[in-house]
Amino acid sequence: MDTPTGTQPTTAAGRWTALMAARRVPDEILAHAPASPYRQDPERFRPVAAPPDTPSRRAAVALLAASADRTVLDVGCGAGAASLALVGEARHVVGVDPASDMLAAFVAACLEWGMPYQGVLGSWPEALDDAGTAEVVLCHHVGYDTGDLAAFAAGLGAAARVGVVMEIHAEHPQAWLDPFFERFHGLRRPAPPTADDALAVLTELGVDPQVERWTAEVRPVEDPQARASRVTRRLCLPPERAGHVATALAAHDGPTAPPAERVTISWRP
Ligand SMILES: C[S@@+](CC[C@H](N)C(=O)[O-])C[C@H]1O[C@@H](n2cnc3c(N)ncnc32)[C@H](O)[C@@H]1O
Image 1 (cartoon, rainbow, N blue to C red):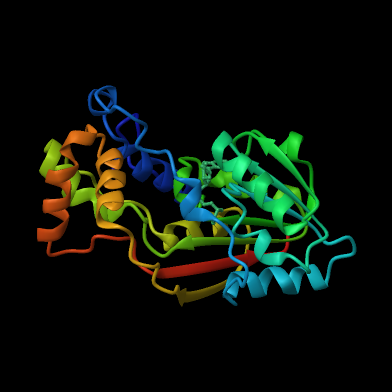
Image 2 (tube, helix red, strand yellow):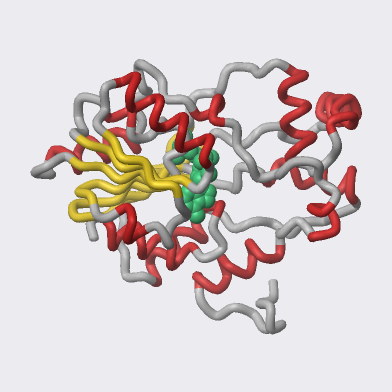
């Protein structure tokens, strides 16, 4: 694993950045992608009426109990699944997301659930000034979206007056697609960083978090056609290849979904 200058990284932050950079989908593949492989579908991230009692939710509730004004900042809020699991606990939520369709889904969910809110269209940590501070900062399933985890996590700590709750997969949630990138594009992607690499970055920042490892409930089975089209887009292939992708998914003898193992990382700045 080399840095862009060809040397081995000497820090955990540098290792994270180098591992992420080494996995970049090459521009020649992206140039032929009919739709962004990075776009997430808000439908898949909607909040639910009875949120599961996860270690991340429990950590956020404990921090809110120690908080005077019960304000929450949800970084990479998506459709609000993390913060709207705190209806009745949080008094006000600021959601930050660079995807306008996600932010619109967040706003709609806040209105539906009666949660006072502010939406900020932007990327973290650049959106720090617009988002302001909150007592509790949540950041669920965004860590693997950043190449500079050190700046990203330092920003989370800077925005939190009482504490931060970060949830990530134990292993990169898109790594299972790697054999399909090789099959359809001949692209061999090196292994991604893991939650342990993220923890090493936090240690380097001087953060000593509480860490809880757990297994999430399995998602309901998705319609196979919808799933094949989603995977086709993620693989930068045109929609007419969805049949080939469905066949490859059915024949694959490895994982065909992200692993269920999660890590809740919480700390007080
Ligand atoms: C996998 S979704 C998770 C959404 C939500 N937190 C949840 O757990 O349901 C990741 C979200 O992070 C957003 N995102 C990606 N990079 C980001 C960044 N640098 N700053 C803020 N949000 C980001 C994406 O637009 C997407 O909505």
